[in-house]
Length: 157
Length: 207
Image (tube, rainbow over all chains, first blue to last red; front, side, top):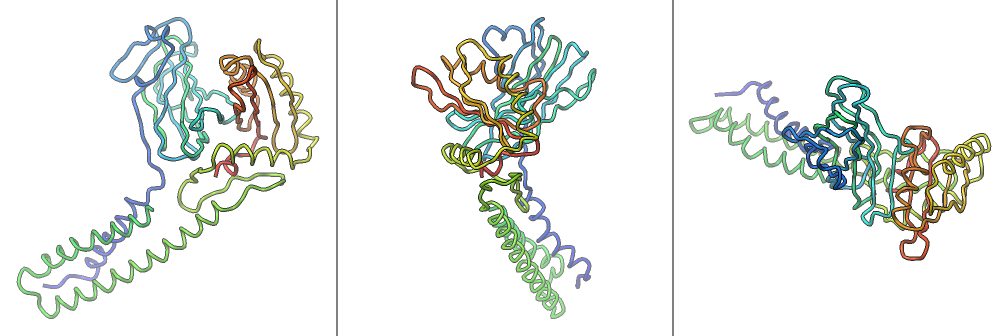
């Protein structure tokens, strides 16, 4: 029994290119439900949960922080899936890079909060270029108005 | 390291691949034609693996060259260093970052066309948001960055200073910002912040 040349090349391609495709991915991504975010103790009762999503039920704006796991220092890209039902039930977020001792803080775009790209439907707030020093920490802070909902954070580690 | 894993993965696949090919080709003892096919197949795989290794060495060299480039002493633009195939990873210590920024700022001359309006904007912004217990010691803008030195009565006051006076949460400053606590134990907490010009990047100071 013989194999055709094209069949043979297919095997060679699988042996060489498949591991290359799998193992040379430059960016490892992670995601986590919004319920792991941290709020001030007095604001905890303002949050309602649906699975791992959180919604602010209070009239005041709530500040939520997520420490996000990173494997290395680098420029991190962070996305937050969120829903702002109306323009007064909005969500804005900012990514921050900190060193290990929390004495250095890095902010992109002058520390400006990124807005939801759209109102009335679930969408993704993207924050590029958060600088995390080697051995440092990645933190995301979101300001959530009443009725605003946050679903998941995703980022490169 | 992923390249090494790549080669390991390729090698790991070769063994089952050879078994699979052998099983597919010859349920019976291999014929002379089948053996020749296998030998040719093996030679081609070895050749391809060698080409991957050469590519791996070239890519690794490119990454090392890119990462090893030191930050410019006083150039108009501290362009971010880009890696060849993988995202740049930062390894500088806090002391190195602090020293590099201090040296960069110290070596810069002022670009009046940018530094004067930038400093006016920053002065007004700091004044408007300065919390009780914070005092701005010095503000100066040069070519690629502004430096703000300030003192604070406590860590809590410093946090208010960062959020209310230094940063621009609603926009207004296009470049990145770094703030550092220099001293947390004295009667006054000291901080130094660098606000980069739009288009500049902290990457060269962090690598």
